[in-house]
Image (cartoon, rainbow, N blue to C red; front, side, top):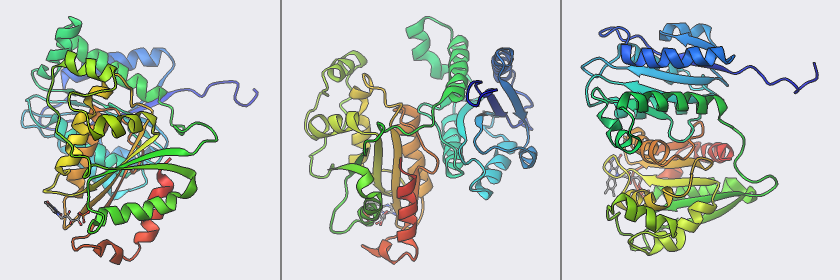
Length: 367
Ligand SMILES: Cc1cc2nc3c(=O)[nH]c(=O)nc-3n(C[C@H](O)[C@H](O)[C@H](O)COP(=O)(O)O)c2cc1C
């Protein structure tokens, strides 16, 4: 056989931890089982994992993986916590893997929070998540209410359709670089910090230096733009603005940010931890992306973040970024998308002993 003439057989690993309290979740199992049977019939090899202890005998690096978590009425799955422990203790175990997440709950809470936590953990172990990598089902399936109304399909049918579409996207996801061949990587860096005092901006300076001339960098400061928060227009009005490259409020978002976002291969978010959250300007930036998001697919753009906290909580800020820009707005989350540091006093980030090395490694990961 000539090399490259036969396509490698597709395979998917499905990690679905058994919920001790509830047993198998029939709703998720029925839909998932049917989809996996169909895929198997199409020649896709399926590997099922039920317990974290099985992972010692399985290679996950470079694999296509679905994490399917069902929750008890109390919103817990103990085996899921064993999985978190496994991935956190082995920071390279998901190198080169591509993952998608399904969470099925019995109540109305905890599904999204659990998915964000899992995404942060598997990403830190090297797993890439394509844009919109989560299919979430709350107990009532009320989260499908809007889509169900738009499509005229029952929530169960919408749920099944989303699950199948996610699994096929994970199988087919192209991990190649997003920049045009031979051209410099177009990087858009967004911040809202003070040049004089910000540790986070000092960190970005180091990363920027390490990117060197392989990147064409556009830097936008939202501090200077008098940025207004999203007005919350109705869907049709927002879509209409988006189609014209606009938003109800103009200013820096429509004049500078929209063209730069459309043009970039990579978005770097520069995020100091403010009360365990993104600061107000960065939050407004994300909310104001909604109108162009309606008409532009961000699914080939890659997302990175620099997060600096004074004392703790960088994981929470990173999870907020994942939820907003990967889950909702559809940016790709490349393995180890975030560099998290702790530094409180102005400029004290420069005192971290291996900060230059870390910044260089992080820059090398940006592609
Ligand atoms: C309004 C405000 C809220 C903050 N909240 C937190 C916090 O909740 N947790 C934390 O670890 N640091 C917090 N910090 C400290 C910053 O994260 C810290 O100064 C860090 O160096 C990043 O900020 P910088 O890039 O502006 O220097 C806060 C700082 C400000 C100004």
